[in-house]
Image 1 (spheres, one colour):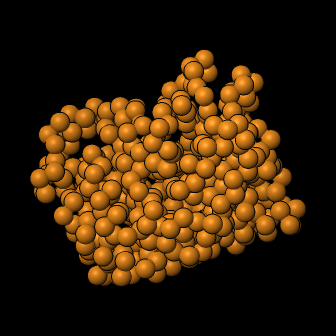
Image 2 (cartoon, rainbow, N blue to C red):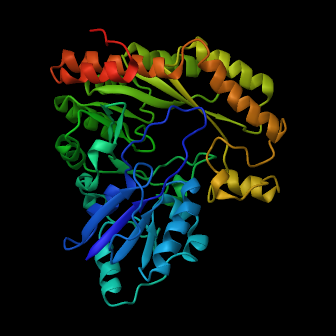
Image 3 (cartoon, helix red, strand yellow):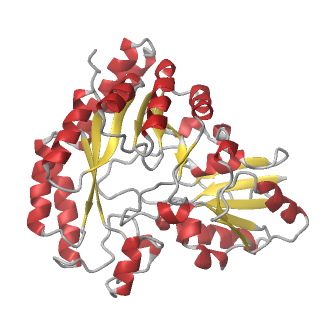
Length: 421
């Protein structure tokens, strides 16, 4: 059986340097497919879809709300040709009812142990409209290595530099943050993979640089320490979402190769200032994730916040506006208050204002978002900051003998100047 798995194109943030990481959802899904399925993967962000290429069954994996309308268009094209289509992924779960109008089947939930049933139904021409396993999650021990072999690796580089590979060590999240849909998608229970399973997958990845995509590693201190201890011999360099603000955890993370973390910066408190300093003291860089447009945010607060980010010397920053994705607390509140003025999912890119803020007009919040990007990078452009981050990892790779000399030429190609030792 020829199964084509498609990842629809989506726009990058307006002020962000454009690069593309290998998507994680499709390779995890592919690992759950029956062994006799011949899967071909197409990432539309990097290559065009050949709609004339033969396929028996098409899967569309969507992570972002800004992918869904394009995903529906792709599905409609295939279904007009008589080729059945199944949807899955985060955005398919968030927009399930609308997506069902463009699908032969929609899969909700985690795929491990479920695909044999789906493909048996396909073979018997009796696909169900919805396979709902959102609240029936497979044992975390059943999560195996992702199918990275389906990726066209040569496409995932930035000016000749190989991008990080994505891997996950846990699912679920015990937090229930205001703008986030994870509690709906993966549940409020933190479900860590057995450490030896996660380590085995990391060790098998033919890339020294990883992105651990867990929502937060700071959920189980003992497990977190065990994971970092076992990562030390791998000599990988990695980035992740927040890790625990504990001296022993930070020390182990640094030994394990922590390159940088994505850290939400939500105020100008001493707590945040000291947290960033502790990361830096352990040699861990920080990319701040800055969400603008909460009901407490005024213009003056946003301006003070940007000044604060410069003061604490963040290595990079990514600015977004509050976006009320379906099945989040933000959506429920703003929808109930009739403050959302656009339900066009193409606008849900996290850099377009789609609701009425409390402290300013929507137009002014849009201007303040661009102000934030421009002010933070006014003295040192984003590509220069990215170059510094890359130089940091090159030095660390050389220190632990995982440095490959060929990368220096690639760095010159990428940034137009040699990388210093």
